[in-house]
Image (cartoon, rainbow, N blue to C red; front, side):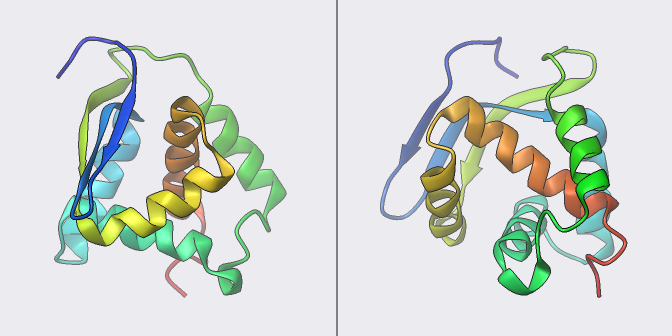
Length: 130
């Protein structure tokens, strides 16, 4: 893991890299567990969850109480004991989704936070798998 430093997002035509991506350790653990349960990779699990939140049928933000709770959890200061920091390699299939999120959250810190909010929302939402 790298030490805290400036974030940078580098996207090529075939793949990309989000440097110094920060994610709560418990969220990473839960996504890893779900990836194992769904017989897929962590990146594919993240992609599926992000894509689902962008689907109008999912009605992301429909549960205000849950969203408020998730936003508060994802707004905590970075703490090396509670958060992981690493370079997130973005496979080609994720690039369109990341670019769509960047239209709404152009700052890299905001993008990092938005990714975590969307991922955590799907972890707590009982209707995610329906």
